[in-house]
Image (cartoon, rainbow, N blue to C red):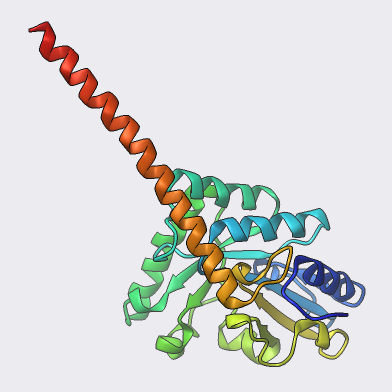
Length: 249
């Protein structure tokens, strides 16, 4: 099996895993039989909801379900825009779980206040999907990691909690770098795994980090140009209407 960041390799790996493991979204953690081989599958959406949607569609084709953690404080996308809210709903309607990717730098250090803020932010995503958000995952985990391991599982499930981290082998493709080797190298070697991927790194044709950044940049430029064009049309209509009214008087 050739290791790269293509959808083909991703799906081939999940198919191979599915022969030996039950693959679950994070919300199933409290229900699964942990004596059996199992995988918790998640995606942190740090850069692009469009990339998340593409990956969700690939998983849907082959009946895999996973958890997509959405940032409400992303500098790269606005989860509350009309277009992006629809994408989040579409991913949810495919059967995938939507979770909150909470920004640790914006969280209070007091645990009760932190849990209250998590509830408030998760309610925003719940209003978009119409489904309760059961899971939260840290963004920038190195900043405030110790305090967050105390989130009670009857409130939220955090895949980076001490309980899960101690019990499941953690594999992540952060910055297109599998620190413990590509996930495909772990098939049949570990009974319980948590696999995290970031949709930005995956594509039909594998690309380097720089190529993906350039693709994202061009895509966002195109969106902004379209928004400005639409605003110019709206402004032109607005001023034309004002001129019409002035001529009437």
